[in-house]
Length: 357
Figure 1: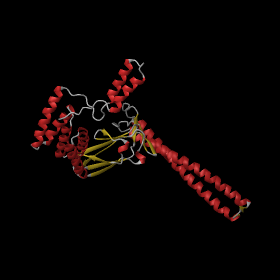
Figure 2: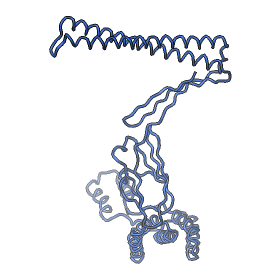
Figure 3: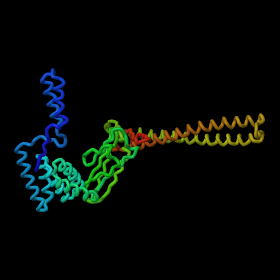
Figure 4: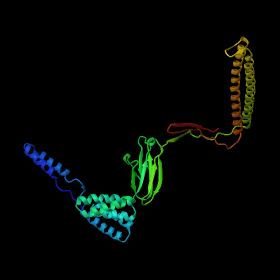
């Protein structure tokens, strides 16, 4: 393992404090010291890691050796976690290269490909041409074998606050509609937004050269159900009361039927009056008799309409009263709570009332 420490100040940064000192001899020593410290923070670039402790280095070395031994024995699933922890404790170009090899043996090609690319960068900074060449060759060999996932978000689905996650990690807008390298196995895409129903899909990706496309739907607005507080089941009506309700219903319905009959008769006379008016009417007008008959036809038609409406109302009221009388006389019937339901989707609002007697 090797830790690359950033070199001291770059040449251009080393000259800055000296020039400042020559041009501004009157500057306080504190200000000059501050400039030197600031330049020190800017030195190096590239990989800057906190220096691991001696204990961390010792443990990282042990884990690295154990990981290499397990890899040689073909036990990649056991070796990779040890190499991962070794890299976390004491990052190094040799460790990341072995970790990439381990994940390739394990079949996690997308992660291995990403680690080989990181190994190329580290080896170039370390001046290790051998490692750089090996890692670059591995990157080129893995690319055609990678499985990829494309998450497509149609314009209509791109609402405010949309959050897309793959296996618990956010997929930013810049990665939408991009074929992302992904390890084989089961994956979960979850989509959420404030005030919308979440969407979740689970799918399986092949280990090599597979391709999956997940299209994000328009998230629906959740259904809101407002339920009235349920009251105790009322005691059933007496038989006499229920009987009176039923007879009232029958009477009302009978009156409604009579009104409907009258409406039909009145409508027939209105039609007849209109037909009779044709004898005294022509294309552009009517005589006095024809005009009067047409007025009578309109008046009777209006009367028939009102009679029909009244008949329908009475028949409906009678049916309701009859139903209440019959239902109330049956014991053990629980009252159904009233519910007001609102359901919404883009461009659609549906509401309704569910009630029981």
